[in-house]
Structures are given as structure tokens and as C-alpha cells.
Image (cartoon, rainbow, N blue to C red; front, top):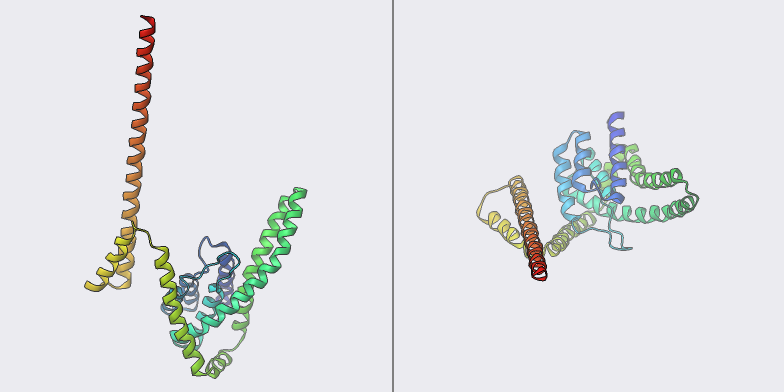
Length: 274
């Protein structure tokens, strides 16, 4: 691993750490973070497979109120590094990712507690009208979230491959096997939570149609992804057309009402003149 790869990996780790707070570009999601790490290390296939598997686990992970979800950024970056560098299986990568997600969850809580100080400092600067200082408070707080993933990633990069392999091999099989089973259970729970959120009458026909295609066709996952994208675009176009037609009908009705009202006013004026 050369210096350019190390810098790029740390950069991806930092972006993933910030993305876990911003929740806009979704750079912290396993499918994106694992794929980028695999691309840097020259093994995109392993990155995509591991990222897709971890993504199924993390579908139902979300922050609700003060409840912090397991951290996908730290788990994705480090597990992909270990799987590709040590040539371990995807199952072992999942077993590694589960405790890493829990450790990342604790780090997230710790960093967010520290960030409270910068929030209060931002309030003080706001009272003074110092907008530049408020921006720096945001930058520093976001930088801490980046370091939250970059520092553990740098520690893993500093370790030799032989040392990492010896640590992984020293883990009892009963633990790795149990974590793999637990990861499978998390996948089922994630699916259940997503299906519960998809309980929309207008979208259920597409859901059932997917099951029919899976049962009676030989579509692969790429085909299903393209089919889902086409159905989504078709649904949005039909919904847009319906809303546009409804708005047009309402506008016509409003114009007719105003015209009838003006005609009635004119008739009333004529009667009064007579």
C-alpha cells in the first residue's frame, strides 16, 4: 500500500465520518464507503459485495431522538480494509463490522458530547454578531466527526498485515460465528423496518410485482435495480401529470366561478339601471 492509497483512504474515512452527521450525500452508507475503499485498494468487487451485505444490515439503522444508531461509517471503512488486506471472507467481514459499528456508536456519542461546547460558543458569537466565528464553530465540530473515523482508520493502517491477521485468527470461531448469525438477524430486522415504512397503499402493487418477477423470471439484482428505477420514474411522471391536471381543473373552475360572478354582477347592475 503506497502513500497515495493511504491518503485517499483517510480522505474517504473523513468524508464518511462527516456524512454520518450531515445525512445528505449518504457518503457514510456501507454501499458507498465500502465501494470507495475497494476502488482505492484495487478490489472493487469485494468492496461492492461487502458494502451491499452491510447495507442490508443497516437499512433499519437510524437516529431517533436521543437514540444513536450503530455507526456505519467506521464499520464500513475498517471492515473493508481488513477484508481486502487480509483476504478474509465476507462472512468474517460482517463479524468484524458488527462490533466496529457498536464501537463507532460509542465514539459518536463521545464526539457529540464534545461538540456541545462549540454549539454554546456559537450562541455566544451569535449574540456578538460574529458570523465568521459561528462558521468556524461549525467547521471544527464537523472536523471532529471526520477525525472520529480517520484516527481509528489510521491506527489500522499503521498495523502490519501480519499483526492484523494474527489478531483475527485469535478470535474464537464461536464468537465470529455468533456475530455472523447476529448480523443475519439484523438484516431481517432491517428489512422488516423498511417494509413497515413502505406500508403505503399506492406503492404496494409495485412491492407485490417485485415478488412476482423474482418468482417467475430469471432477473438478477442488476435487472431488478433497473426495473425498480424505471417503475419509480414512471410513477413520478404519472403522479406529476395527475397533479398538473388537478391543478388545471381547479384553475378552470376558479376562472369559471369568477366569470359567473362577474356576469351576475353585470346583470344586477343592469337591473338597477332599469
